[in-house]
Image (cartoon, rainbow, N blue to C red; front, side, top):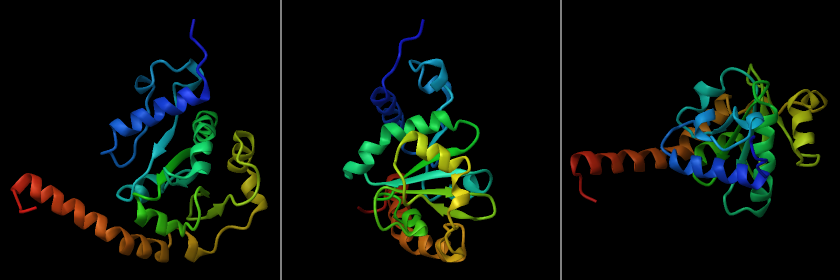
Length: 193
């Protein structure tokens, strides 16, 4: 018989797994990564996104994306709800989170001006902002599964998949990519520190 796991515990398991796998560009938590979670939560589809693979992995399907900051109290309060939303929408809509303080290029593509910022990405480049409404699992699931129809899509120039979004992301993400390249050259080829 499986024990009931509190939402805080689920969030802690996800966060621990995310910390261990920080090097991967997108992280899907397979069932074996969370063996102590009860059966309904074994197929969590919570992704942690980064600049490098964002376009390739969000090109198909619908995505709910939370751009957050680790220091933000509202973001921390949303975390258990976001984990529960990932379990609830498993298969229907993919759920992702982006650390806007580390993935500045990706945050710029979304034109984030406050944390947390929640978006629904649809095929074809449509982007819908979840600006109003409660941040409950029920309300977010309703928005993801059709409530977005009551909201106008963001203009094309605000889409992270549009030309402006890609350009802004490339410009603001360049310093991080250069730093990573230098670090790799320092480690692999002994370049001076």
